[in-house]
Amino acid sequence: MSTVKAGDTVNVHYHGKLTDGTTFDSSEGREPLQFTVGEGQVIKGFDDALIDMKIGDKKTVNIPVEEAYGPAAAENFIEFPKSEFPEDLKPEVGVQLHLSDNQGNHFPVIVHEVKEDSVVLDANHPLAGKALVFDIELVSIG
Image 1 (cartoon, rainbow, N blue to C red):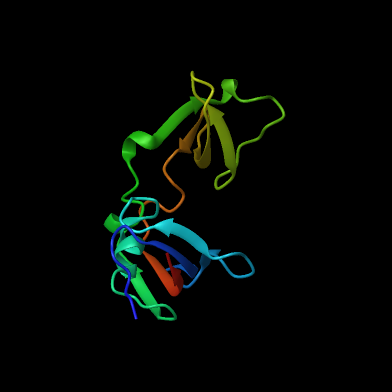
Image 2 (image 1 turned 120 degrees about the vertical axis):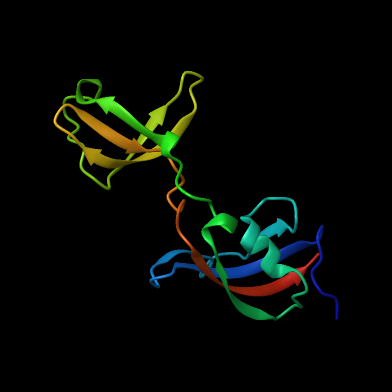
């Protein structure tokens, strides 16, 4: 039976959790995730975990911050004056908002802190700074 190597296209079922057991994503009830191993289409720790797996294999892998979404970067915290928010929007810590850059690209941010005259937004990936745990099942290769 063949095993997974870099360059193989694979189909996997997965259950992604934080280290406290909170689920953040799962393929349950959906088609398996398909990607090519070693091409950077998924986080490094997930990619690396598939090497040498056989069809039907299941494993649980602990992925450190550096092999997941990396640490939260200080430069991705942006402070905006409250006056730049729409009048009907009352920002609260933990709420997700969407910003646009000068090129018209939209990206999600989380309200990190609400100050008297400004709001600090976190534009890091929501899983940045977090170690992750994945239960993985290899469904097919190729």
